[in-house]
Length: 313
Image 1 (tube, rainbow, N blue to C red):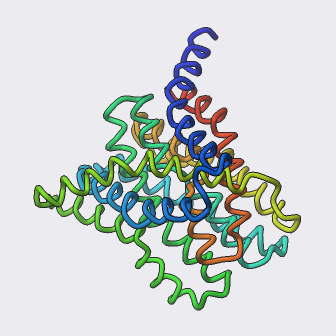
Image 2 (image 1 turned 30 degrees about the horizontal axis):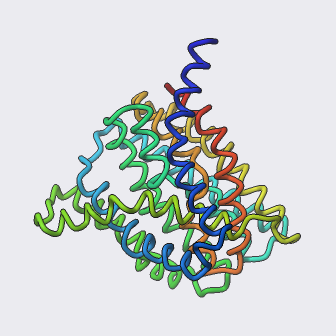
């Protein structure tokens, strides 16, 4: 019992710096030092520069997965896509509006794995977790994000699925993840000046993204609209409870290495990414609902992530 309590306290101490950045963003907006337009600009920087640079460098410099890790990644992606489909189906059965169906499904499976999950995994499991986390991030933002965005646009009346998929792959986040994956599998190195420039942008992505997340929390904190309570609660439960549980089962059955299983389950339990709020606001009418999922899931994850980290160590 003492060893387990020590592991949980250690995990909590390691995650606190990330939540301090989130708190700083919330304080800036609650005190009106950072206004809504400033938050929009910070989010745009993260979406168009910081996050794409982080994905290109994190994925592009990671080695291609070996067969055992590839099985784990396949199991992770299968579990996540299955949950995406189940949430979409639940929304249809419960007659949620189209935007809420797609937005809640995305919010339930796309986590803050790049800004919060990967750095936290490295701080808990060591430097070798970085390469393992990169594979999970690739699945999140090449496969899962593509399907989730296509579903959200299709259910929001943004056009046929084929059109939605085309728009999805032109999204800077998805496009950057694809570029990073191609560089990794092709073992292609970038020219020195370009690599250093991307490294500078990538270094700013996590603190800027977490601060932007806190700013969104400061602006959007409050109760969801009455018609969005059910989708919001469902997305939170899927993200924090069902996804890590199902990923644990899937990667275990796939025979993935224990180190990968620990990282995959931890990243699966990450709260909803602030990028989901940005996308939902842009492509659907579930922007406020997505913000509520991001806010609430992030607050609860301050408790759940240390528990998962302590359990998986």
